[in-house]
Length: 324
Image (cartoon, rainbow, N blue to C red; front, side, top):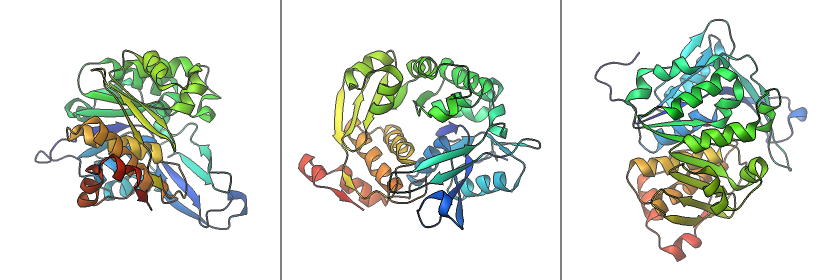
């Protein structure tokens, strides 16, 4: 329960968070005897990243009235995320997913059909925390969960109020059992957002183009479009005609799951701090590197002095940066 003296969250993130079972030794799932229990979800990962950077972040969603739901709330709360707006469902379970790690990358196996979060709908948009925030963050994952979840995302994107950030986050496995066309739905939602994050590869899969300028034009009238290109870098197109590219620094990679969420957290934190676009992209890259350095989905906190020194590097210093 929120107390009157507590400040409002600057950013409210809306979406499903699940219990995550991770192979203890980083090997293939089928060979495991023990698994490590964590929590993860695209939107709550962003909330955790923002909290790690010193911002007031809240996560609004639904979980089951079960041990895994309580674990989700405890873990996010311990990371400094406000979970007071989360509904607990007495009948539906908390979703679960398994990571399948190996030499070929990390696969994911979802068990979230019929979860408590799939019953989120437009009524959730009336939550007071969402009206008081400076910024909202949602993703295409939520739109893939159910018809009511898709309507919730549409409602949040269509009403006046806080700046709305949308991460396309195309997950083909979630759309296989939905009658909707993901390319059309995600294009509609992205065009309605104030800030859009999209991977070059997923734009090519969804809409047939991987060229950043063409992606920007396709997503118009979105005010800011950030196109991420994995190891190469990220480019931001802003509403005032600015185009800024920042290369991805060389970093150690344990696994890449959660890196996009961490990037979004860094970028949005810089926006809240009124930093320029280059600094926002740099902070996104720095946060993504922390997420890739472990098997977990959530980035670790960065020391303020470390952040400031790396944001202040000249172009040559940034190009020479080695992380991890």
